[in-house]
Amino acid sequence: MGTIRQDIHSSAIPVVCRECEARHGGICSALEPAELLRLGRHARRREVPAGTELVSAGLPVDTYANILSGVVKLTKLLPDGRQQIVGLQFAPDFLGRPFAGSSSVGAVAASTVRLCVFPRAELEDMARQSHPLEHRLYAQSLRELDDAREWMVILGQKSASQKLASFLLLLGTHIDPTVDGFSDVIDLPWTRADIADFLGLTIETVSRQLTRLRNAEIISIEKNRHVTVLNYPALTTEAGI
Image 1: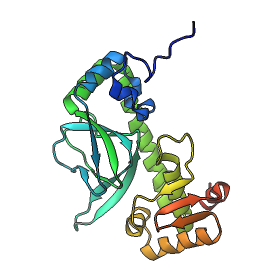
Image 2 (image 1 turned 180 degrees about the vertical axis):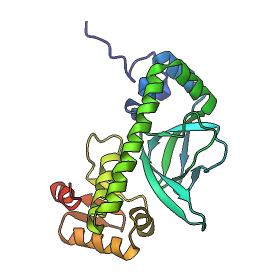
Image 3 (image 1 turned 60 degrees about the vertical axis):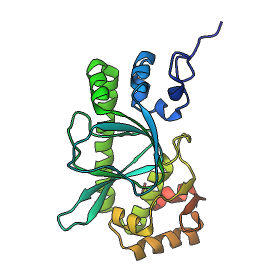
């Protein structure tokens, strides 16, 4: 008799979790079936449109969430009232700051976002009891730190064309949780103005660089936001990788 896989297809795991492919790489993959059942009793699915504020900087937080699909932008409010985009999150990232009463950054849906939301107190209590869950949360925090350091290099040292190519590679690698590796079809979650803000460029420069990549047949663009990567090696070269 063959070995029964103890994964999301196991009958011991809640149905809502068995149907969640995002949990393979998220924090829930560190949980045993009984722990998933416990968390599932308190979890609820939520779908929000682009522009919805998910976390308010400086305000008390009573829920955390797993991102099931879509893109979340992390923002920092500047003294003059402007907002700076400081990071991106994708499925199956964990949205929240464990063991902190509030977040230093805000979180806004950059596209339609599907979430699995659960109480902060429940998740933190489980993390105290489960070393694998605690380790997974810690590992994601370190990965986010590594990503932030890498993006500092991109913003500080790369040219405009390299920044935009690096941005497209970032999206293609993370935007579709069902694709292992790189997705060559990207629906840009932002306007040109948002992309310019994130990359530290002007809107005109972003538009010019996208046109250049299209004319070089490295990408194709339909309806301003639907991008298809036609030549992945060339795009990595453009990114300076």
